[in-house]
Image 1 (cartoon, rainbow, N blue to C red):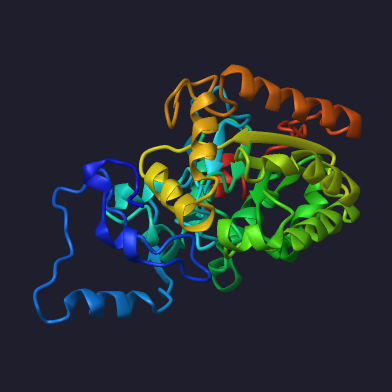
Image 2: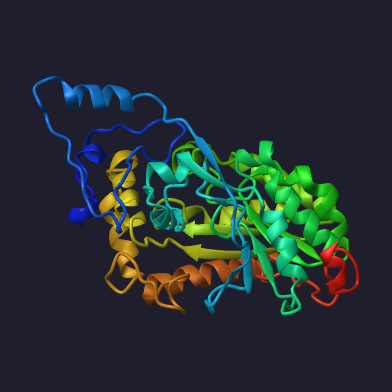
Length: 373
């Protein structure tokens, strides 16, 4: 079955390429800013067969280094509980098919499909740019999150350590932060995070979408396995780090039946807070996700999308502030009630872990002058 009917995003390749182990998609979908489109054709020399043969090879990951001009991004959405964000990478090798950040690769003239999970941009000077920002006389400490549009502990972090260098600057400045991840790699930095957490300066949220390892392998193929994430919650909690769970995104008839089970498992592991977001399908994510449904759960694809539209006012996606994270209508309300009732029963009815902004000091000393040396 072809992807949804948006001509500029259609591709014959998306119809014929089989899923590849370890990748959320092998569709190098054209992005919305692309001036020219390409189309496969048979030139009589076996071109189509050659393309299919090449695509059977597992696409390799490229990590491209970038000198970022700035590292702090402001947030103007009332739906999100932080003011600033740091994303040490662009793109994410975890390959979660539903990732709402996929369309950001369009701004790099790269595909939100295959490129998003195989062409990773590493902001190698992130720590330097953060230090400069915190030293500015105009800077006022604000709620800051790491990893809102990319996983800060994706595989490249093991070698590059950019996230660790960012946390070291925040530790020096006694600047509070929250962090969200699907990776057990966060355990590496407990020597930095745990002491900050003891001073109400750090909190970690672990995203658990499903407890089914078979579903996780195709839904978020290079992220840590569900049981490994539960062990990460336990490790963080034992180290004294306030830890929450994100049951996101909730996808009707796919992981939605597991909602209560995930919350129970996270609470048993040591989570003390929880939040949840319903599936979002902005821009190129929509055809990518629908193509994924047809590949992996064709018998449920139409039913899932019908329920998504029920929660989005009849549309595939609704980007409106106030509703984009939770949806609207009867089914969205029933989901909200299920989530809140379970959280209340488990003592997880706290979405945000409070952090202390009053301890901030510019890195390098108590005065801004120290930032110059």
